[in-house]
Length: 248
Image (cartoon, rainbow, N blue to C red; front, side):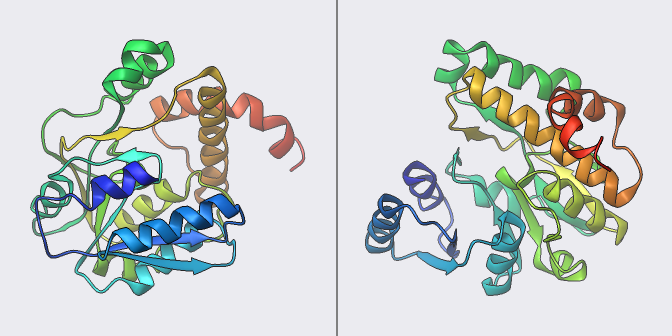
């Protein structure tokens, strides 16, 4: 989180605010960290709430935000200096959201096969673009790690669906509903780095989350996502399926 906030507060533009939503954390060390961030960065506004899940936390941020555009990233990400500028300046008429890729750090790719698999998944399996590209809800972007929405588009769909219980599928659902409202999506090659160790444990946890996300998304919309995303999500679905599917 320290690295995330440092990167978000070191941007090429000056007129922006940083909203950090604390979703009911109870770790005393985390409380100390938030106080240190509050003291160090005048730009950061910390919003505290009872634990309600990631969708509710992001909706709280949307509720407080006053700007025309709302950018999202996560606490395990490092954004580039031109992140806000690159996303916001890429908007054009009819575009509801602009996002870019989430990729491992160079150090992680050198040390971990799982990090290299992450890049391969994005570039080959998801066929992620390398140039600015306009598309629909299935355009592969970085989810809430690297995306910016028009506040108007977020308000039109009442933000994230808080029925999604974990950080899985709620970002795809939002993108889907915004597209249903008639907005288009735009991919831009503004890379956010994923500050993850890319161990087998973290790979397994991400795979399970992807499986959960696909399950919740399908339960709500009753329609599968693209075949490539379904194939990838099966890595997690096999672990998640016995608990969540066989019991329904």
